[in-house]
Structures are given as C-alpha cells and as structure tokens.
Amino acid sequence: MAVPAAVYAAGASGFFAVPYTILVYPLIFCFLPRLWSVSHRHGYVTPSDFVRGRYGSKGLSLAVAVTGLLATMPYIALQLVGIQAVLDVMGVGGGASSNWFVKDLPLLIAFAVLAAYTYSSGLRAPALIAFVKDALIYIVIAVAIIYIPIRLGGFSHIFHTAGETLAKVNPATGKPRGELASGPKAQWAYGTLALGSALALFMYPHSITATLSSRSRNVVRRNTTILPLYSLMLGLLAMLGFMAIAAGVGKGVKGYNGQLAIPQLFLDMFPSWFAGVAFAAIGIGALVPAAIMSIAAANLFTRNVYKDLIKPDATAAQETKVSKLVSLVVKVGALIFVLTMDKTVAINFQLLGGIWILQTFPSLVAGLYTRWFHRWALLAGWAVGMVYGTWAAWSVASPTQKHFGGSSKLIPGIGQIGYIGMTAFVLNVVVAVVLTVVLRAVGAPDGADETTRDDYTADIGDPGVQQERPLAPAGH
Image 1 (tube, rainbow, N blue to C red):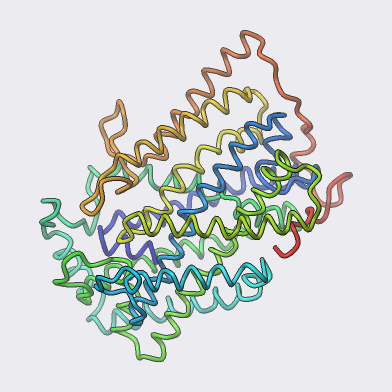
Image 2: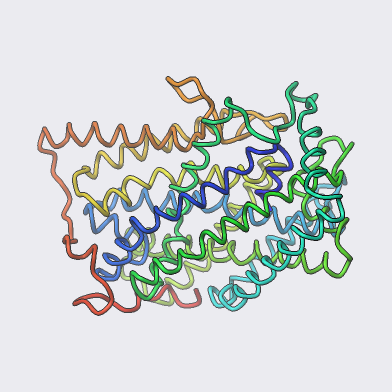
C-alpha cells in the first residue's frame, strides 16, 4: 500500500516503483544465476558467506551482515504500517486520540501478530499461505481497477480531479502538493530513485535467501518471468492513489495520514463484505513478507555474527534459540522505526533501508565478476557510503519532522535533487576504486579467494554442486 499512498501524497513521483521493478529484470539475469552457482558449489547460505569466501575477510563479511540486519528493519516497518492502516480504518484504536496507547494500538497489534506468527512456526507459516496472499492481492487489484473507476465516473474524471487537487498549494510548504505528471525538475530524483531501488532490491537478505533456495540456475531465471506481470500489477496498484484523491478521501482533514487513503478508499467504494476481503489482502500481503524478512535477517546474524565471531562451536539448538531471539529483536527494531519516524509517507522506510543495503552492492556483485577490488578498499568504501547516506538522510527535514524526513537531497557537484542512496553508492565505488589502486601499488596483503572461475557457471549435476543448501536453524 506504500506505493499508492505515495502517489496519493505527491502524485506522479510515486510511480518510480514501476520502472525500478522493470530494471530489476535484467539485473537478475546478470548476477543472481552466478551467485546461485558459487553458493551451491561452496555451501554459502547468506551474502556474507560469499563475501567472506571471495575476499577472505571476516571484517567485510561482518559489515555486509550488519548492514543486512539494519536495512531490513525499516523494510519490516513498512509492512507494520500497512497492517496498522487497515486496523486504524476498521476502527481498532488509532484515529485522533490523544492517548498514546489508543493511538498506537493498531501498531502494537500488528507487531504482536507478526511476532507470534513467526516465533513458533518460522518459515512454515508464510510458506503455507503465500499462495493465498498472491491470489487475494491479484483479485482485489483486478476488481478495484475496474469497479472503482466506474463508481467515480471513469479515468478521465479521476485524472482531472487528481490533477486539480495536486496542483493546490500546501500551506505547510508553500508549494503544490504534487504533480499529475512530473516536470523536468523531477527527472533526476525520479531516475535515481528508480535505479537505486532496482540495484538495492536483491541485496536484501530475504531476496538472496529466496534465490539460493531455487533448484537450479535455470529456475532462478524462470522465476523472474513473472516480474513483468508484477510490474503491471504495481502500475495498476499505484493508480489507486489517484482514485483516492478523486474519491475525496481525506479531503479537508488537516494533516491526513496518506497511509490510510487506500484502506479508506476500499471501505468507501466496496460493499462491506468485499472491503473485508481487501483488508485481508492488505494484512496478509504485509504479514508474509515481513515474516520472511525477519527470519532471513535473524539467520544472517546467527550464521555470520554469532557462529562466525561469538560462538563457533554453537550447537543446532543454540543457533535456533539465538535465531528466534534475533528475529524478535529485528521486529522490535522495526517497531522503533515506526514509532519514531513519520508514517504518513511510509515508502520512505523502504527507501531508507535501500540507502543502507545499496552499500553492499560493490562487495557482492563486483565479487561475482572480478577479484580486482581489494578487501580493505571495499570496506572503506562501504564505511564512506554508510556514513554519508545516514548523515544525508538524517539531515532531510519534512513538514512533520526535523530528521529522516525523506530520502532525496541535493547531489553534490550536480545541483539536482536525487536519491541519497545513489549518491552514497557512487561515493562508495569511487573510494573503493581509488583505494584499490593505492593498496595494490603498495603491495597490501590480499585475502585468500576460495572460489574458482568454474564455480560461477556451475549448475545442478556438476561436480561439487549441492542440490540443497544447508538448512537454516531449526524452527526457521
């Protein structure tokens, strides 16, 4: 729901999510099959496993693991906000109550449901209902994109009303609320948001876990064939933001929370029974990915922090216990993000996570093709990207908060507004390249590379290729 909520709040800029899913398609074909091959040849389960094996650096591996944990928290926060919005519209607490407990009751319920959902059942629970989730979402979007425009007088009326509404000046900023179609000034922001989000998407621990669980390289490629359909669905989903504007959702309400716009639209437009179906689709659609994200992040910590650095002789039972505990801690971290940051444009949660996880791209993706980069240079580049990205995001203010108010900022040396994650990424790469040249020149010691060229093209049936990856800790 974050994408149509962004369109509702700011107009066309929210559509950046559509081209980024298109850009992801060729990226997957380029590097994920290679990651699958080398991982199944050497038994790698996480991106940190590969980085440690490729560069012989526990420090770089730890940096990738910590970044994965940190970046996953705001991504889970995005899912919590979606569940909270549904409960709020249903009248479960929330609203304009001055009592903090009543106001945040939907969020606390969402957190409790997510924690209980994964603590005892692990990955089994989301796996069992993933099909139901997908079916519900596609049904609701198909009905919404046909039924709601009919109720509102057609797409012509929707676009006309949305254009007029977005053009009105926001008293808090002195600028128009948004644009129906972005102008030249928004091109850098739109382009860098799309490209940066595409590069970041498959760096997340849960994305890597899903890829490595495929049976073969060809399955990785075949699974991507549904991405164009997903992009189409996302484009139609984004249109709901314009429909909510045309339907007058939140009209005249000062400081209206845009995250409530789509659930409220469904409640206003659909018969009550189908509004319930739509709410179920939103709730399950947020619950399943949030569960998978928290479990993947927990397994990343257990394998690459706890077992690698803290207790190398940990038993399977100890790993399971730690993994469950960390999964809960990650959810608590996500809850803190929601409680301390602006929820009205929740897409910023994902974009903040993207700023961080994007800094692992050079270590992971470059390593799939070349061993030229020096491990210390990659670690320094990662540190520069993380520090700049975090500082830049912290310094962005919005009408509702002083810090972390957005994910775009003036690009140094260019003078255009762009996605902070891409600026940090460029700084990361520049530092890594320059320091690699220097370190190679002075003969700095390199880490041992345990992979070979053939590892990156190995497929199922080839010598040494494991058909199944090593299992995650029991219970997950």
